[in-house]
Length: 379
Image (tube, rainbow, N blue to C red; front, side, top):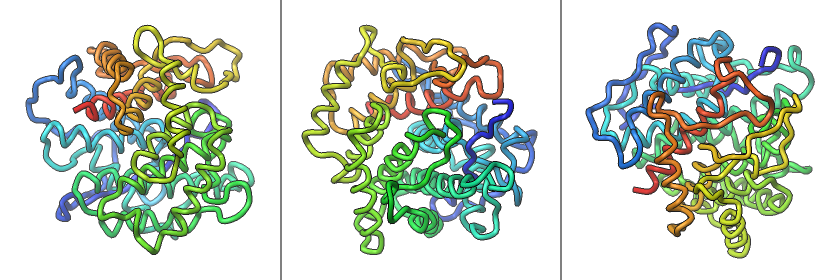
């Protein structure tokens, strides 16, 4: 990662229950994890250990100089902050914790700040510094992930706030209306799988569909966005067959929340295919979910990991699948949390990374978030 930019999607604030005043934490030393109530560990896994890991990674991210952006905001990464923004409100609910504080509050404050200052904040990757097209890519990805994260918090509160509607509006305004990306967004591409590569365009669109379908106040049926939603459905349907299996899994997840993303036959065929990809130990491997090739030529791990298992189990559960394969996947997740760190294992698809390097834990960050979501969905 020495010379490669990390995808940043600036973080923003969320007023939970309509009354929480949030303030941006400007320095690493001032960001502390929220205090959690004493809650017994879930059967087979430790919620509080997972929470500590995710919060510690958020604290680290906000303290990293490369994550700090203009107007006192933070950049948000697909691997660390976007997945944190999906999993953390679920943990907060199930641990019966108070509203966000510390690093979580700072992340939300930053996202909301950038949403409000959308026409004033700088893109994360301006063309002048990173090359032609990077400004469009980074603005598109930022807009989508801002909406995804804010709506994940609103869903727990049961009401879509005005700031979240504004975030969705920014994303819709950037949605492609013509050409090969019509219905989707020109996505961040630094040729790093699975979040910053050509196939990430579909991945991002599927996450947007998931967020739209899950947003409260029946947002998906709002007449004002009907043309945008139809375009998104059309893109996901027309590009589905060409996607790596990982992207099709995310589309499966989205299809449980937004109708018309997959046909019944596509859903059935994909569920069957996932059953065939399950390893004997009950898990799934990212290596099996696409035709990846590392840039350094090192071989990929061909064993079960937390990312592939978490996102697969989650997508199956959300589609009502509660069969023996899902049960084995849940058992794998429960058995493979690192009790010392609270994290689940995963590794880079791009190169053999030093786990102690800045980029080393990124895949485990995402793996831990998806494992948490899958295990909490079991309830």
